[in-house]
Image (cartoon, rainbow, N blue to C red; front, side, top):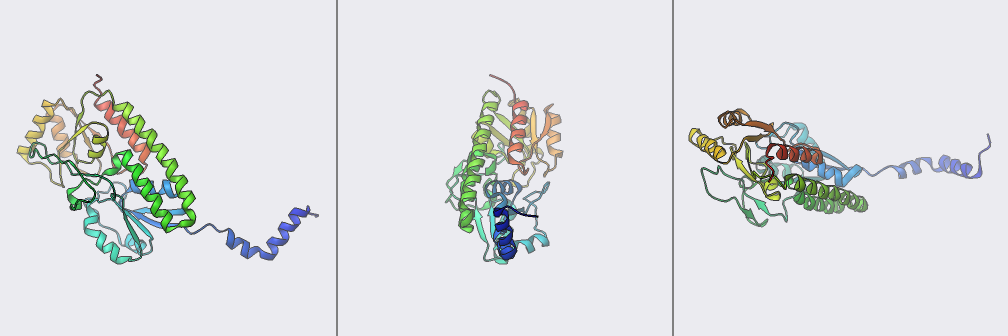
Length: 306
């Protein structure tokens, strides 16, 4: 068979330099990255694309408050190049051990540069406003609300931080990381716009939640969460009565819960206020789809148009 000149040349080069060409054409080895929770895994994958291989410490259905790393994860961590943290409870116990396990791994705190909120206490137990704290304020992880990702605008800042740190670890991929971050930020802008539109006409701005995971979301969209449980402690009988009284006074008829926590107390309150329990999950991996589901749940549950 007679080949055209161009194909003959390509065939000759392949036969002569095949191994070298094959080696040259191999894609770069993916950066080995860990994150504390699944939403952060999604963020890193959106920015990093195929240049990153990402694992989350806390898997589906697990609670960051009670999680302990598995031996397989610790072994994989010893080979990782980057770790993204955000201040969830298990990190307070394990991050020092993780750092000792792999001293060459860069640990990136995605709270850096962001204003942090304190976790709400039971409103009936304390009138103290959780407020907003500067990022340089020295506070314990357990005192602060780590759920920053429930505000898409804070996620935009995280995406930029991820882009910068991935580019520093892998300069050859800087253009790819920039493109990934820009595309992700466009999606976040669209998400934020949609949620603002959905919740703009909701008259009832207060909502009851078992675990105070939605403080940043509430602050972003002019809502107010009322927490049942704080720092792993459920309310006693007196506090429970106060929550029920507060819910009735505020015409609150919905209690939002997440799968990582017991629904027993939430169900008790729901019966007392003739309300219902609605499941939402701040730890779901598919961030954009999950936030749209969450916004729909808030809009339909609190819908009392002006």
